[in-house]
Length: 420
Image (cartoon, rainbow, N blue to C red):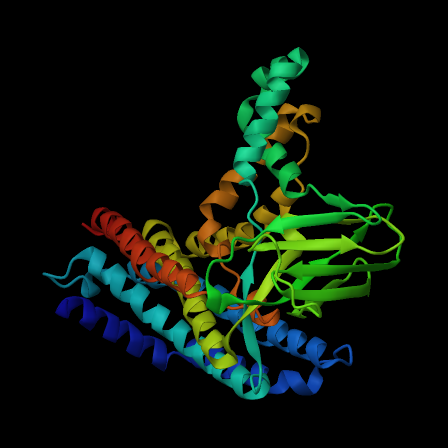
């Protein structure tokens, strides 16, 4: 442990004295302070807040992530190319401890810069703001629904069986999974729809419904209706295609719902409407204040930076500096592009073999970079959604423990063979 702390201390001092790190910290703080004076919002308080969070903290996070990932990729490779790595590897310090110490030091630098940005953001826009728990309807897991659809099609259509046997089940299941997630539910004029939320925690009493209603034929009309949840209700009278928040208040009649935990919607408009329950329907329950939420977001953001740094140190130990930096930049780019590409997963029955191979590579890329995409704390802050403690715990376990330890061991293994 003493050797690890010594390595981390030396690397941290080197980072603090570095002009590049000083410029990173200065640029991040300056951007947070200057943005309110140069940005142009939509004229509403919520619009200004959302823009501020997205383009201030979001930009700082992206810059910190890219800069420290590149620095991590170069830290070992640079010393090895300059023949200085032997000076660092003073016995009995293990090679993996050298890598872990550098990961820890750079992660602390990233956490410090993000802490400054989050603190400035809190003083700028956090006064009086709160966040909400996001409660989603309890629906059949999409993986189970996709498998059920596939089994039914295999049993009914011989041509489908032959095609699946030719191209493989995995690509077909991936496509059906997207179909399930995009499946909409239609509520006709005068009809009622219901969704089970199974909210059992009395302290998480819903305060509002957040929904986006879509007209079946793409018309821009007003959607009218009443949401009911237990003894609460809220009336909707908004243009469709927009995300709206409908407060739930005590029902005028004072009557309790017949089905606890079930949200119902009665369409009182003149047209049928559609909704995507898996994407566009949630209940919101009050959580806590902005400062607690931004603190949780900071922990998650710091853990994501630590994941990228751990990857970068391993690549730097394995490759030359230029190649290592290129590889970590490619990984970060793939973490952004791959999920977006898979959101529009094409029908594999209508694609060529080369297209399917590309999709498999994209799918692998999305899986490999999934820890970087599993959490979206900036988006949660922007939408006043609570960054849950369970997500903080998971992100911390992955970013501060699992990935640094795993990649430090791998980097140490590579360093021992490249230096000895």
